[in-house]
Length: 596
Image: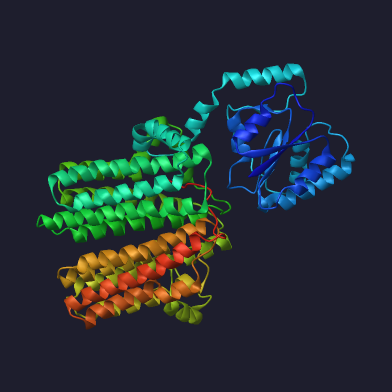
C-alpha cells in the first residue's frame, strides 16, 4: 500500500482524496509541516509515499503519471511530490530542512512545491513527467480554482491516456495498422487486471503456435501461421501499451519484452524451415542466414548507439542532413519503412508465408534485411567519419563488453596492451579470413582452423586499448558476423541431415547471450559476469573450437557435437540470465529504444 499525505487547507468539494484512493493510496492529512514530517516518518520505509497539496486541481491521469510510475525514485508534478524507497532519504532530508526553516507550524504556499525546490537545490534528480494538455495546478484563489476546474473539464484525460499509451516513434505498419485498435485491447486488459507480463507471455505462446502451424508444411498451416504471427504482433504491441496505460513497468517485464521478440521471430524461422523440409525443400541455410543477418543488424544498432549516446561534440553534416529530412513529413515514414522495423518485417513474413513458400519468404526477408542493413550501416559510417565526437570511457567499456572476447583474447591482449591498431579494419579482416577459409576449403580441412587462429589473434586489438575510434563501434558486429557465418558455412559443408538445424540452435543460443549482454548494458548493470564469458569461451574461442571439431570429426559426429554445444551454451546462458533478471538488484530499462 502506498501512502499519500495531504497538506494544506482542505477545499470543500475537492475530489483529491478520492482520486488518490482510486490510485491505490492510503490518504492521511497533515495540519502543518511538523505533522507532515511526523506522518512521513511513520510510513514504512519500503513503501511509496507522496506529499500532495489539498488544494490540488488536475486530471487523475496527471496524478497517475506523477505519483505512480515505478521507474523513478523521485517524481513530481505541480502540487505533488513522491518518493519510492530509493528516494525516501532525500525526501526526508528535504522535509526536515523545510520544517526547520519554517518552524513547522504553518503552511505558506504549497509544501510539496517547496520540498521539490529543496530537492532541486540539493542536486537530487527528480523526474517530471510530460503532462501535455493534462492539468496539474494549485490555484491560489477561488477564481483560479474555477479556471483550473474548467480546464480539467475541457480535456478528456482518458483520451490523452489512450493516446500516450502508444509509443511516440514507431513504424508505419504499427502506427496505422495496429495501434489504432491495440490501445483499446490494452485498456480492456487493464480493466480486467491483466498485467503486461501476462500479455507478453500470450504473445510468445501465440508465436510458438504460429511456428508449429508453419512446421506442418501444409497450405492451411502456412495460412494459419501468417494469421497467428500478426496476432502475436498485435499482442506484442499491446503489452507495451498496457504498461504505459497503467504504468506497470517492471524489471522482469523489460527483460521479457526484449528477449521474447527475438525468441518469437527466430522460432518462427525454425518453424518455416521445418515446414519446408516436410515438403522436400531444405531451407535451413536460408533460415540460419536470416537469423545471422538480423542479429548482426541489431548489433550494429546497439554498438553505434552505445558508442555515441553520451559522446561530446557529437555532430556531423550527415546527422544535420538526416534531421533536415525528418522535418519533411513523408520522408520520415519512407525512412522508417525502408529499415524494415519489426512491424513491417513481420507483416511481410506473415503475408508471404500465407501466400507463397518458405523459400520465397526467406529470399524476400534476406533481400529486405540486407538492403536495410546496408542503408543504416552506410549512414552511420558516414556520420562517424564526418563527426569529431569524443567518446567516453563508459562507451569504450560497453563496446569491449559487446565484443564478447574470451580468455584467449584476454591473454594475448596483455602482450599488445596500449598499442595502436586500426581496430575496425582488423576486425573486418579477421572475420573475412575465418569465413573465407571455411568457404574455400572442403569439409574436414584444417584451413578453417588456420583462419580461426588468425581471427583469434585479430581479436586482440579489441582489448589492447580503449575502443574510442570513430569506427570502433563496428568491431562487435564484425566479430558477430565472423563467428555466426563460420558456424553456418561449416554446417552447410558437412552436408548431412541435422547439421544446419544444430548450427541454427548453436547460433540462437550464442545470439541470446549477446542480446542479454546488450540489455544488461542498457540497464546500467554492466556486462555479464566474467565467469560466464570465460566459460563460454568468447567469440574467438567458440569459433576456434567449431573449426577444430569440423577438422577432427566426421560430418555425422560434427552434427552431434554442434547439438551438444548448443544445448550446453543454452543451459548456461539461460540459467544465469534468468537468475539475474528476476533478482531484486536487476534494473529495468527505462526507454524503449528504436523499432527492432
